[in-house]
Length: 208
Image (cartoon, rainbow, N blue to C red):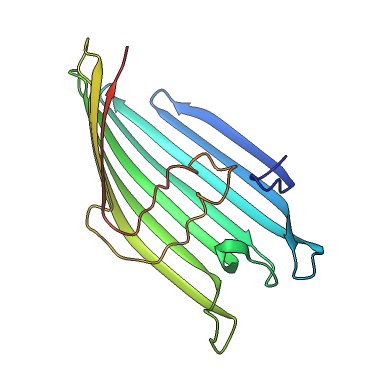
């Protein structure tokens, strides 16, 4: 397997399970371990290899109390290790990240749906200091509550849809290490769920 356009070899192992617990209750969990062999060309033209290790654990619980209503809660625990000699663009030697979203979704009969998601995000790690700092690395952490809302309108028998989404509705400012844009193996690479400032997305589309 390869991790990115630089053809970094990666050995990945994982397991997952999904189960219907009751008529309207579903749950699932998964764990993925990755061992990446990252290469770097040093200042004399020789290639050096460094081992990056990553473990990600996911879980979710979904309840469907009514036809038009759904509620879910999930979690993602990520632990990432980089050697001090080469941390890459990530700039850390260790990162532990918790993301816990709780979502309520409503589906109208007229093609209108809405969602509200409350996030709890916590991160702690050992990060690189700017050049000239007294020490090359520093321990740091941050935690925050976030609120996202969205509205989708797709009228029946119409060839268009409209959606409006607001990320970080309360405009909370915080420090966040985003790995989604760095890792091609993550499904959310092009769509980071966490944004450190309020962001509004509007989309209009045609369907045929």
